[in-house]
Length: 366
Image (tube, rainbow, N blue to C red; front, side, top):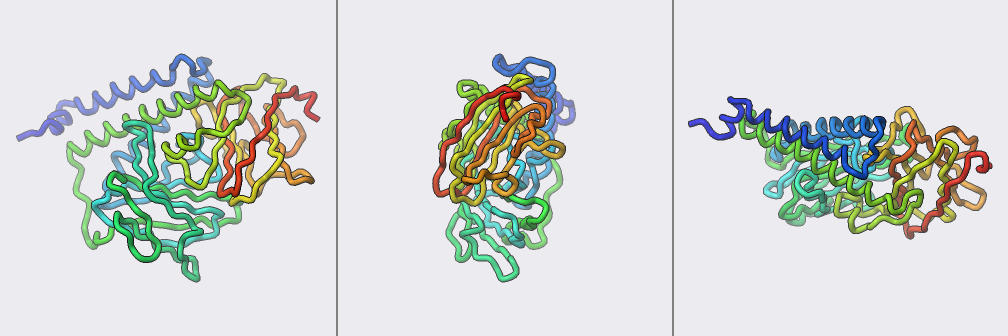
């Protein structure tokens, strides 16, 4: 007897429903308060295409919790939620019905943090952390060896807990100096997998994967477009974000976030002064577009961190955002944008000093 999913595959309905739902996602780009010029709209549709690539990989190709695989789902050409240019992000699908093991080497990356989460970007816009461990808490071998057990019940050694609804794991590696720091090399495996092999694709798996991918596109795009709209109340300011909200959508527990929006005329610059840099693992600032994608850090200087920054004699830092090179340190390029969003992070800081901001004419900067 043919199942409903098999019938939808046979008559093409599964694909048609996927395409129709994806078409509806275009309405998010045309939201009333989103910029409606051709440049920002083009970036919006490209953003949807990037989310779709990530969604298809996550929900169709790497969805089996019995055979998890760490994959980089946010990088130079798949971006979301103020993705950090200093980060390497990896994730894998897991299930609290099983225990897992992460093995590998620590490397020399400045910060390594691993969280279990309840990822609901596709169905509600939250990503609750259910367990967390970072390199400072890990027992690491003499040659950098790492072994971490992931399970609902506590285990000896490096243990990362899961909750009843945990469905994913997130690995963050934060670099200060990408050229010279060596990344951690990690892999995940289900304990007891032995010689098992994944089951072949079925009509049900295809249908669920297509549905999950398009729900991820709509859920993520809606979440971050709405967040961008909320920043309009503090445009060209950089106040502390709602930290509880940041944590609810997947923020690292060791990070204190500042988020807002920016807009500059051709002859203006945006100046950020950090009078005090606290003791911290690291810090950074980045410029994003309206869709909360980091700007193209492959070809432009759109962020600065603890290692790359120029410091004033008193230890303070001034960051300058402008369209053209103003001839001062810590210049952040707008990369062809005249508005967007932005983020400052204190990472592992002992306190969280406020930032000062102002808009100036370029000719008045020096």
